[in-house]
Image 1 (cartoon, rainbow, N blue to C red):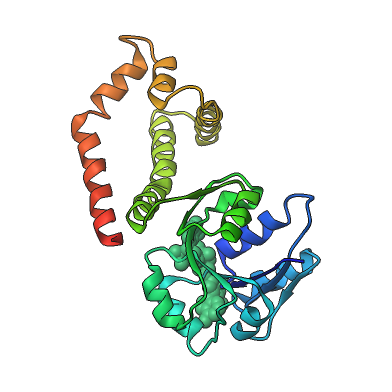
Image 2 (image 1 turned 90 degrees about the vertical axis):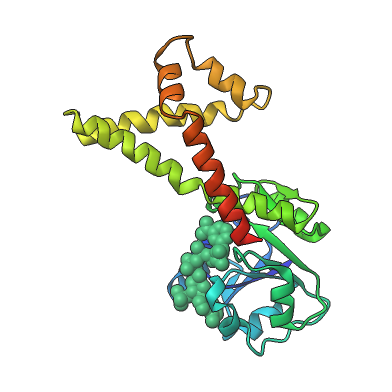
Length: 254
Ligand SMILES: NC(=O)c1ccc[n+]([C@@H]2O[C@H](COP(=O)([O-])OP(=O)(O)OC[C@H]3O[C@@H](n4cnc5c(N)ncnc54)[C@H](OP(=O)(O)O)[C@@H]3O)[C@@H](O)[C@H]2O)c1
């Protein structure tokens, strides 16, 4: 049976465990670090074959694939003195931590692969970017919604920057809701309506036969309200501001 270890059991560690237990296929054994204690305890009580280890070294020793999911600033503390034999496979999900950096910390010859799992992995609904490609890591994320191996670390960083835009999307929706509430609409009605509008938009995205520009055109009458907001608010200046913010983020990630 496959043995997966996770060091750092927070949001993303939990999402990985839930994703692994989401389907009815053969389930790997999962070994968790003792921190974060509450989440690790909850997961081990809830799922068979999920165990909490005494320390981070025990997680590595009991696993074939070890996922490092602590915050970037905690990595030295979490990994200091931890021995990782060359026959292990290490998956680095820490944003902004390159494999060279992690290899120095771990002083191991084991294969290291970076990955960007997102919370929707818990329902096996998101594609995970990986670099460098590794057959075991690719098939691990394939099972959790899809793997997208990329050619080099520069490409990996571009995808990483894209993931930095998610919460802006929620704030955009929250701003629409507040605007409607400011015009006297009950907040719960505005909230319900905005969610329903954009759930429909989200569903349309699963139609891969239509490009994003075609999907926009599908929802837009020439000279109509959508065209008006798109061209008066999301004008070339806003588009340029977004592009510049992404470029600046990419520079920091590189
Ligand atoms: N959340 C996302 O959507 C997402 C997506 C992609 C990548 N990531 C990356 O995944 C990593 C974790 O993010 P997260 O959102 O899951 O953060 P989080 O919820 O804060 O979880 C981090 C976990 O690491 C634990 N930890 C701290 N020091 C540790 C140590 N010495 N040994 C073992 N565990 C330790 C913390 O435990 P305590 O609670 O005990 O402090 C906490 O449970 C980050 O590097 C982030 O960049 C996150």
